[in-house]
Length: 146
Image 1: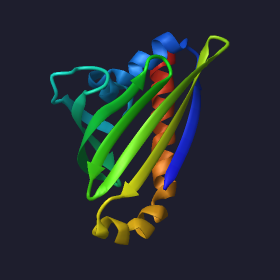
Image 2: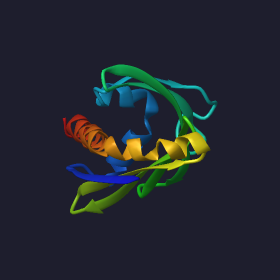
Image 3: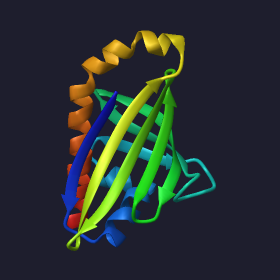
């Protein structure tokens, strides 16, 4: 399952890109995120590990996440392993006439037998996930544009 969403933020990439790596501030920018807690020595960029608590389907869920790839002003890759599934989120940044198009690609690949059994159920939740991802991007846009 792969879901993709895009938004154009009316700010240069040099302002947008670092905001997506500012784990401590992201909770203030995205209403669905209740709390973030960096648990690694690395505070920003590749190697940053944090716990993120967000509300999903009316319940608080905490996941451990890690920045596993980054190319300045171009790409951020975040991974999380949960319930036997490897989740990857890629943020791709492209500056266009002083604004920044941010494309978010989210995918999940079942790693365990049990996770593979539940893969069809995950497909049923794709619509809800797409809405959440779009909402996250729109919240970042509003926050950064002020």
